[in-house]
Length: 262
Image 1 (cartoon, rainbow, N blue to C red):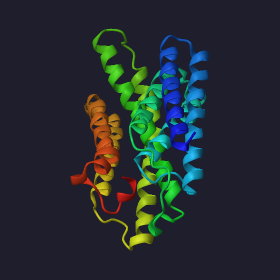
Image 2: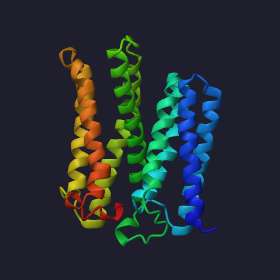
Image 3: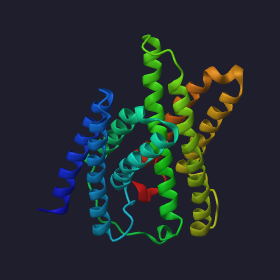
Image 4: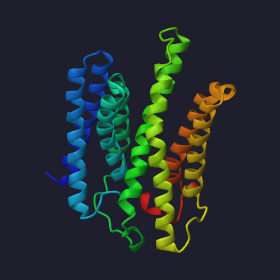
């Protein structure tokens, strides 16, 4: 059996495990939910290791590889937040978004070999990508919770503000990682191309995303703006999706300096 065939099987198993985990969390079967969450995570780790061995380099060379790594971020973050903030009830969202991130990888061509161009042979490469993936994972969960929270409020199924509090805590972790990702990218760019910022499309959209999340936090500090925080968060996530997906996959928005991620 080829590596590609093994990867496809592992992707299918991991996706199924993640979504089953989400369903079990939704049924208040957390003990079984975490078991399937770990099963999906181990499958994702196995895919990452195959990608790494085949590429003989950190497997961050294309969207398929990055989305596999993105899926791996959710479980450790969930366990941390469950222990620190008592957010065990958010497992339904963390597991579901893990599965969604792998669905994209499943339908992409699993290019497991790639050559790192000289600009990518920088010590900033892995920290830059890792910090952004952590922030994106948390932002995706926060957006899913925002949507569900709004629906529950409108249907009268929830009147408390635990969703808002949880989202604030989650984004409070995401934002520093996003900031580090942007700053490390600037330092990396200066090292590789001699300029900290070139205003290419990827950089511009990443700055828009970062600014919108900053505005979200600002809204929460002002009583008269607090009701707009959720809307700003939603706009920030749409900008994030543009940064992560559209700029990489849509030729008209593609970035020359970030073309390695296509």
